[in-house]
Image (cartoon, rainbow, N blue to C red; front, side):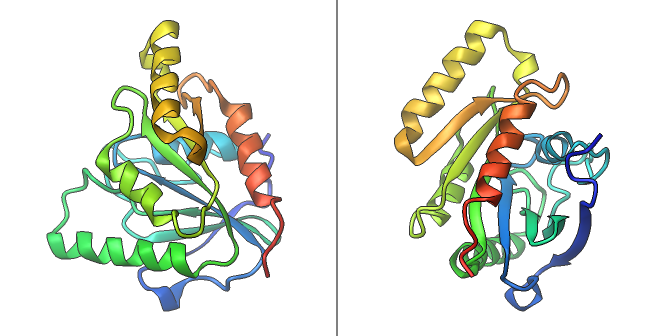
Length: 198
């Protein structure tokens, strides 16, 4: 059973003035296209097809707001890096994400979805850079851990943790066998309950 039985989609936004009211608390989820962002969200929320998964990377092209419970939201940000979109759309996404991170007082944390086999890419570093000014807490989920052996997983986690230092926490995760599910959900809850800033 889902820990978020009241969870539901609120709306999609393509501009700052379309964002939902900036109250309560929210946690953003971002990741390079094809890193398994939608699958990770579905496992953490424990609701099938809560966030739409697709075999075509980069289907999340808007800022999608979901209510988890009253006053607490999850925000699915556009998949970046792999999607076949125009340069103009990429620029628009960059501006939209920059506005999002700068404007949201209710934003308490970022879950960054990273393919464990590829580790951090320039796109992931750019996403982290969006949060530098606010020093927003970041938790990195190294997804698709089921594709690697235990020793390889440990090495990958160590490498990523070494690169990000104190700026983020890191854990392995697999939507397929649900490895790291409880730890990821606990971090989501920690961010949601970090104290409303309104």
